[in-house]
Length: 427
Image (cartoon, rainbow, N blue to C red):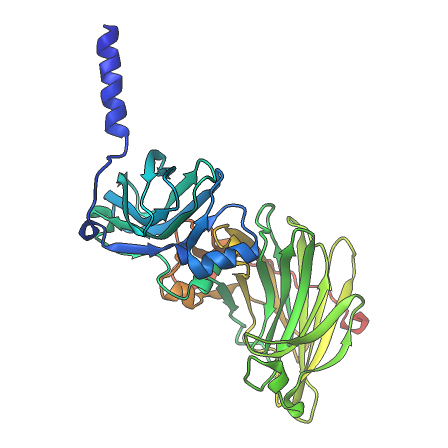
């Protein structure tokens, strides 16, 4: 009887184990570059940059894990290998969908190394984990190779533009201003970042407008910022090239606020204040845009932290060659650290209002959800937006399954109570 039970257990174990095979390159036609799709735990920004530039190269695992992410629309058998080499003979442990396999690496030139066949039961994102036992051998893995029935439909992963692929998709909400509103003088918004969602590299942008943006960032373990920037009308990524008559002028700034020029994604005037804002707390943002005459517009940003209990000035900038009020009020969520592109983050955006030049408040309860080129070209599919009661939400990164269609219209529940702000008392 005991022998029969043992035999059945052995058969069951063998049936559940990944099937080891020797694959040909023709059986694994899809190559997933590790440069854009693999993360190694514990890397800092500089080390992650080397991974971006070279893929998994000269890796001494020492029990660390390299995780590669991809999305399949189909289910069924998936055959997995890798283009890899090792300086000395070594073994690595491979895990996929809860199944494990030990793989020997003995080749010293990059070539196909078969891993195993696995089964995919659900469409969505999948993670291939490779863990080294020690650091006795330097390992290179340039590509993860896949094939089989589960790859016969669309497979999503980053094929190029790996810097942006590693940062992950940026998502936006453009709020619909009620038709009865006249020119918008003030734009009010609130953000609450749930506990655990304040991931390094996150920019929870609250008050965006055609000419700039205003929100909060996670810049380091001990540093967070309130950031307010206005672009110059002169199109360049180098602020030194901006003619004097098109430069952003700072009019005033709050206590502890740094101001400077910025570049790389357009150029202009930037201000920020280091402030350790807290997850789980709602912060308020107020942006004013008003024509200042002589074809220029003044933009002023105010921040309200409940732990301080009053509106504080961040900065006020004057933008030349501009005659406008607040246009296209919007919010976004982005990640600016490549090493955290495999960690999800989420923000709640609520109580959106505009105050017009006739002295009336108007609540904005409808928004259009959009995403950047990384999402639109299907390099990354881990992005979402929606409504939770009286709040909108945006979520990105982390390779979660279930994206929101780009250009969706989203509606939240109204609050119906306008902000109570005495504008004459603002600093």
